[in-house]
Image 1 (cartoon, rainbow, N blue to C red):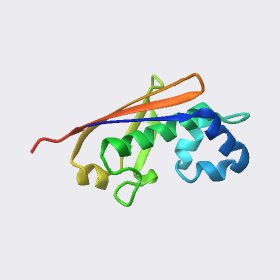
Image 2 (image 1 turned 90 degrees about the vertical axis):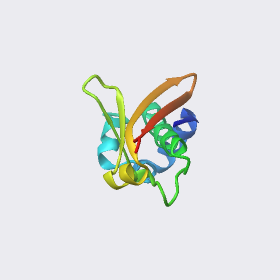
Image 3 (image 1 turned 60 degrees about the vertical axis):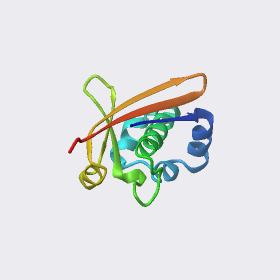
Image 4 (image 1 turned 45 degrees about the vertical axis):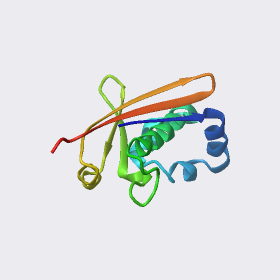
Length: 123
């Protein structure tokens, strides 16, 4: 299953400027917020990429952000090589019968895009 999402970095940047960390806390955990924090504030392109990643994951599962899958059911991190990683809470992995999840995020031309590929366990 594949999900994709694209978001304008400027839209995210405006929300960060207007609402600061309160905006981030609506969809990112404290650990995720630390990943996009810089000495000067929050990296808007990183935040946009994380937003797109969670939206893409929900689309891959065909449920969107809903009662079946909330923003905080998904956890973003980075590998030792700084590649983005995504995983779901264990109960959601089981509920959706997920074997593995792959994530790619890219930024260019004022946009962030994310693609999520989910492999479902075969019974």
